[in-house]
Each structure stands twice: as C-alpha cells, then as structure tokens.
Length: 93
Image (cartoon, rainbow, N blue to C red; front, side, top):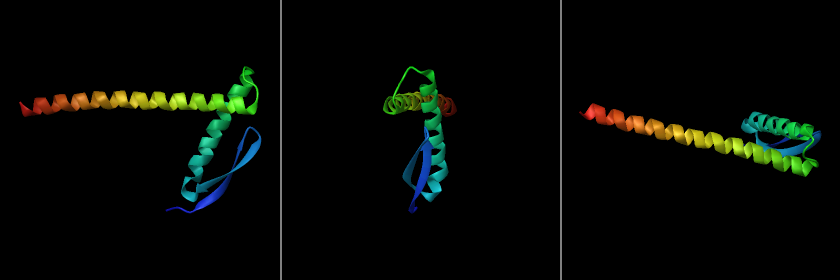
C-alpha cells in the first residue's frame, strides 16, 4: 500500500493540504485543477455568490457529468452484450 503524503492544492486562491498517496498525487492535482476551473466558471458567471455556494454548484455540475458518462457507458455495455448474444446465436447455427 502507498504511504500517504501531504499535497498542497490551490482552489480559488486558497491553499488546501490534502493527504494523498504519492502514486495518486498527479490525479489529485488534476482533480483540483478541474474543480478550480469549474468554480471559476461559476464565479465568473456572476449568478452564484459565496465560495460555499460556488463549491456546491461545482460539485453538482461535476457529479451530473460523471453520472451522465456512467449512464452512457451502461448503455454502451448493454448494446455490446446484445451484439455478443447475437453473435453467439449466429455462431451456434
């Protein structure tokens, strides 16, 4: 198991120290950068005020995107399974 280290990330001009295994630091930095970008987009729109509200809206947007991708993948898996079943039937004939 990887030993946890502390990584500093900056989101909306604030520094956060996060415990993270060394082999996951690049992924965490990427995630923090993505969150920072989403939060800046929301702040720039001017429709949401306050860091906490901006963070919640960013979390909702990111979660929605993630769930949509997951749903798309499930749909693709169902199509592939159906095609596999058809191929199995055709090969059995």
